[in-house]
Length: 117
Image (tube, rainbow, N blue to C red):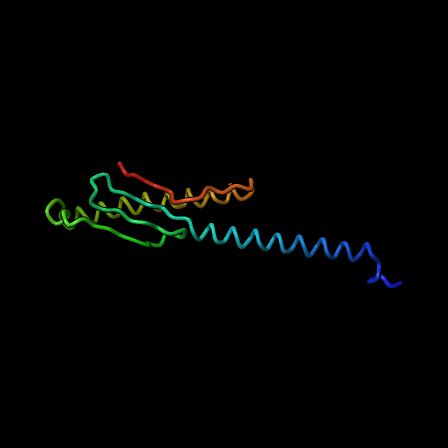
């Protein structure tokens, strides 16, 4: 009998293959959940809202028509800059919570919501 015919060795190979498959499935799941993280930011005045992706990219943006009569260009720029800064902070917190949850086996699902007041 060669070492490749040893039944114990075959069981070890099966075990390792099963563990590898389970690890790859878990990694695929983690990647899908990470790329699915969203941070939604709402202006308390209701003039601006947007959604950031897991990497801070802008995915959607809404600016109410009332902005034309209630804010100057500089006022809108400041509001957007403040909201984007807060949104990016929330997004980084969401990613941090994701990675902390990975070790615990549970990851918070759904969008992170930030109501700026």
